[in-house]
Image 1 (cartoon, rainbow, N blue to C red):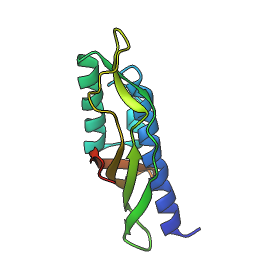
Image 2: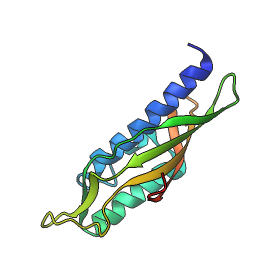
Image 3: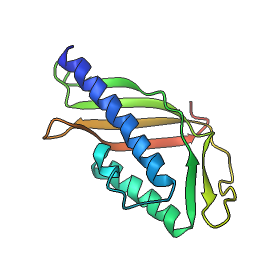
Image 4: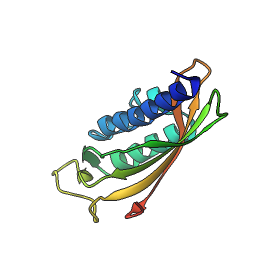
Length: 141
């Protein structure tokens, strides 16, 4: 396997891992979950923690899981990448927010397909972590 293929596989695994960690933490809105830092760093980690803290503060939990379909849109430098851009069309239809106290659905609008872009970077220890991401509105893909 080429260095480029290894980088792309590592980046996609980190991207999927970040969302898995976020789903798990979201079930209780555990904004301090140590798992969040396993696959995310920098702005991405800050945004995950802040989102979970807001849900915690507002008495919300997230149930279900998103459906992901990520692909690599670019990797640089081409021969031995240390930065990979991941594009996805995530489906949040079965991943919604509920009130923790009574289990009532909190989301005013149901989920759907959303464009997601992420920057995944090789860390000093050789691991891959998502350093930033953006989730666009429902219906963007």
